[in-house]
Image 1 (tube, rainbow over the protein chains, first blue to last red):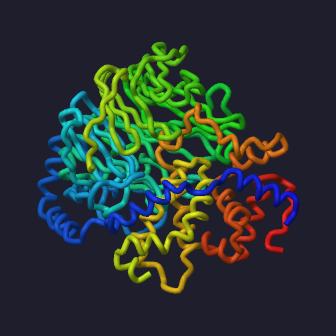
Image 2 (image 1 turned 45 degrees about the vertical axis):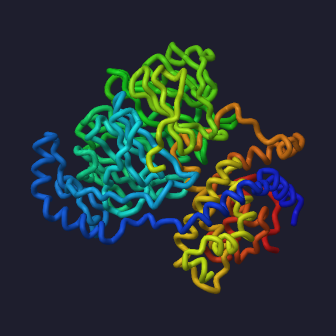
Image 3 (image 1 turned 180 degrees about the horizontal axis):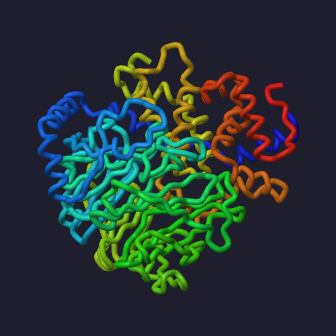
Length: 398
Length: 166
């Protein structure tokens, strides 16, 4: 072994460390607690869903177009299929019955909760990326809701609801190395998950014109009303993309975020990733962060034309991760920092939120300027005063 | 193994015990965060248990489990951006990072190295796995594994002198 290799070995050792005894004990306890449930939907449930689907498809097609007034075009009308291949078992636009699969028990750490809070009383939670819950009383009680059945048991990347009925689910991936490309599936429900329509399906063989492209991984989904929504695309070597739709997810157009001042997309990981788009009337805001030779940097981009163009608004390098409470009031919840002038200046603010996330940023969503929800690993806290005070609420699935 | 496949969690725990240490060290080098590494190894353990029925008797558990851990680390790196985002006030571990200026460049290079390169270097140089086991974790031939090590070294530091499996 050469001197260079010895030095590399030492550097890798320095990054590493032995597992703590507490972790080993926790892992042993988790394994001893019982066999993990398969995340596959039970066969019987799938069969039942299929039968129900066939029985109700006509009614649901009519209901889907009549109630929402949005046409979900069939894939044959606009497909640009590169290679002839079998289509997925459920076509785009075809409504299917959702499947309700109760979790096998309390969701074990380190599973996660992804939140969507469309209004002060309505909040949705995607637990462990696999189980969907809704609450119409601010998180005091939760009801599990059905999920799309195809493919069964696969995790979802993000959830976005605009009320207690209308919502979308994104399943991204699997992504290629450095996320040079990645598939995406988006499902839409207009009845709280009872039925679902697949509005986007993209993989290496099915890339549809006027839809989301196969390039880049997709992971964030945000709808601001029943027709307007956004999905991000990112990779390690290029600039991030913000896809937008104005018809409930049927068609999409792409916009690229330009490098903000002081940031250069070099590739090999030095590239920006965008988060969820947040809407405040005519103003849209989105965060993006990325690595540079001197560390992580964060930025905010703004759009005033519905996402057609995005312009750099603010530097978030310190604090790095913020939550948009209003168009001008932004908070960094873990560090208890606040800006009331769209990120130009920052000052401490009093909050009793305490993260146990050990360096990982929590997800924080605000339904309005006062009501917000924040994750602390698998728990959820709620504030009713704009982030000053937080109380634990019942965690769905626990 | 048979008890574990039958759903005996204690038996599976015993089976996994010898590989938890290398799995955790691999996750640490890839994620550079103790909490994230613990999460990745625990999630990998649960997934391994779910997949245990597909594990061929007579195969080695270590490369099989390390491949699951590596995949979990890749997933963690790609998971929701607010989950992988590091907060600015989290200090590096002083005991392992305060090693003099001559090592800082290499540390930074490792920080910036694409994850697939970091994985192969960690398997070979940090965990000291033989080439054939590196290949099994990466699910490629031994020749391809050697090539990947060379590519990772070149990406880490052009001109680096190495004697891979010489």
